[in-house]
Amino acid sequence: MNPLLQLDNIRSVLIRQEETIIFALVERAQFRVNARVYRPGGIAIPEFEGSFVDFLLHGTEALHAKVRRYQSPDEHPFTDNLPPPLLEAIDHGSPLARNTININARIKALYEETIVPEICAAGDDEQYGSTAVCDVACLQALSKRIHYGKFVAESKFRSDPATYGTAVKAGDAEQLLKLVTDLAVEEKLCARVRRKAAAYGQDLTEPSGEYKIEPEFVAELYRDHIIPLTKDVEVAYLLQHPVSE
Amino acid sequence: MNPLLQLDNIRSVLIRQEETIIFALVERAQFRVNARVYRPGGIAIPEFEGSFVDFLLHGTEALHAKVRRYQSPDEHPFTDNLPPPLLEAIDHGSPLARNTININARIKALYEETIVPEICAAGDDEQYGSTAVCDVACLQALSKRIHYGKFVAESKFRSDPATYGTAVKAGDAEQLLKLVTDLAVEEKLCARVRRKAAAYGQDLTEPSGEYKIEPEFVAELYRDHIIPLTKDVEVAYLLQHPVSE
Image (tube, rainbow over all chains, first blue to last red; front, side):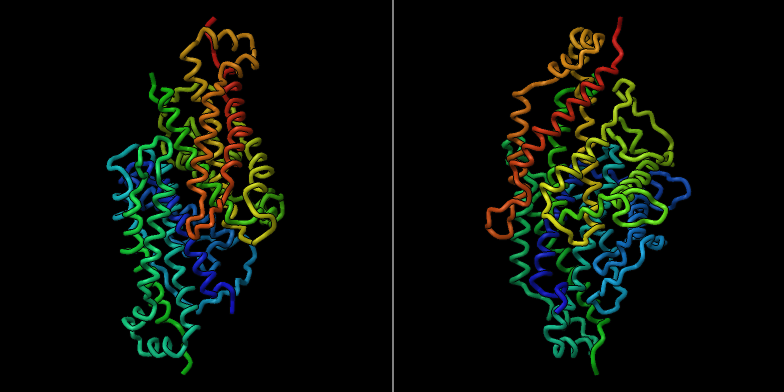
């Protein structure tokens, strides 16, 4: 089997992404909410409609598109009108079925409306540039993790094409959601993420016992949002999956 | 006094930057050395001379320049030919004396030649895009920390203008280096950085006791490179400092 689809490999990629997400959140948490950066026109940029974060996000994605980031099956842009790659296309030999799933709009709303107000102190410190750079890192990390559900789903489909195929042919999203759910794994994951957030977010400067972000919030973020969104990606992906007649 | 020059504030900025640097290094360490990304032409980019990292670095800095990053006295670009800001200039009211110090070329050499081979496994995993994105984050974090020496130096100068003024007038770099050196503070800093690297770089997935980067290396990096380079910035800055006759 393609190593990208071996469950052990997928698992270690997802586990490593926990660090990336927690680091990015801890970095963002050093600045205040700075709501202006999320409001279209909050910081007026000539000839650009959208928020300050949209501007940085589009600019970053345009740059990364030039070096082929979004040709990779595990990368999904938040913005449109990206330039073509400067480098020759390489055939990544995607192990995924052709699909059109990109739920970044939901991820962005979750991030701006739920995560930022939770991890950042209220108010405005005028650190707009640093804030938006952190936002881009957080959004990219969350998007990569959640869309990795496509690899999880493909792997699961291949491990039991008969059962999955039946649910796919019936268009039975509810059954697919049941099939991809493993509560024991999810609980273990949340416990691990809580441990990691406690270790990486602790204040080691003074023995204050304070956390830069609450470990419990990170566990809840996974339980209530990241895991369900990942499973939404899995189900949506499976519903588009070709099945043999 | 301008709050940017109060030693307590400077100290807390520098301490918080330790997290940013360690997180960035841990993130980079998940990929192999990937020497190709540092070699000019190692990955051919049409109409661009320089390495793949240079391309990403210039593109990122061009984007950030548009939103005024390099108008801030604590930010220093690695690359030239950056576009003017799209946003109106704001007077940051820099508390620094006018100066031309930018040692990013030395920082980049340190990073590519010493840091990457130390923290990354040898070889090539073809993760060039992810690698270069991490490189940009590491370089920006190191540059910001080291050039913060300008604020340290200005604060010290103002705390004792007579002593510093005499050394500046004499162009006595050796004496200035002595004046800005505090070995007790440096030792405390290295111990703290070692503790932080141990906490943030530990592998919490398995109780393996392994580190993603060696805490001792991070302490040495500060002792042998980051602190000396910061002091070089301090001395160079002071040598350009105006003194009353």
